[in-house]
Length: 306
Image (cartoon, rainbow, N blue to C red; front, side, top):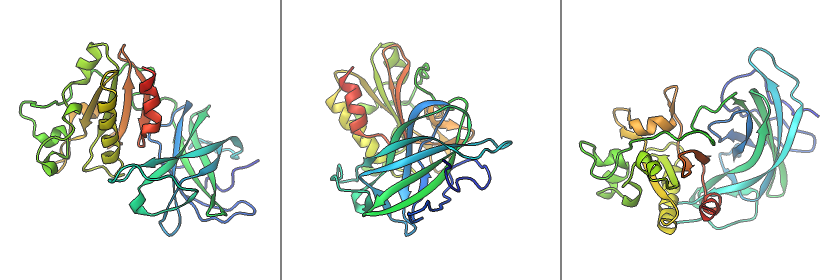
């Protein structure tokens, strides 16, 4: 069984080529939403958009994965595995969006989200995914290509967490916006309870740490603000089991100066990908991580088990 029309020529990044399988309409643009895919088992996410630029959300979708080879050697693209994708909603500024039947087109006022599944990639190189959704009762399909690396490029589960000396409240010489980019807008640093401790000191205290690295004001995906708010609420609810820390990405956004602490976590090859949420255990190792999209439904059960 072949995954149809996934690769004209290998290239890095996510593709949005679409070609219909028999009995379906080719009306789905697929964007791979995962930041750091490597050999092994991990969470995989895609965002779905119609050709009319309407977001697709809710319900579930079917995913098929095929290995496509490397830049030097392409292969036929036989389907390796299939999986079901579930919807992860990002709350809008008014709070958690209400659940809906789906998949369906989602008005921007209701927020956005991605479809997620767990999948294992057994080799590095280029892969393809075909996504099929019954969109408002009509089957639609789309495909995308993406690269899987031999090893993770960002701090990964099982690794020692960087002993970061991030900026905290009252840091000498640091503008408030370097601690949280919302400070200029809100007349002071919001969520002060996320800015009282460094990652290094939290690890030294042998206390689990939930860390979010994000720039709520300047985030390209617009996910950072709602996800940072969600982590701040978890900090109120679970302060007895973990320390909670936010690291702002930008020391000076206008001059493109990145906070050194954030660079340790999210800057690679002069590229910044965020938001990220990491759970660091009592021994200072990364035990969980969530890239790009992180929801309370995923994180809260982990905190409850601490």
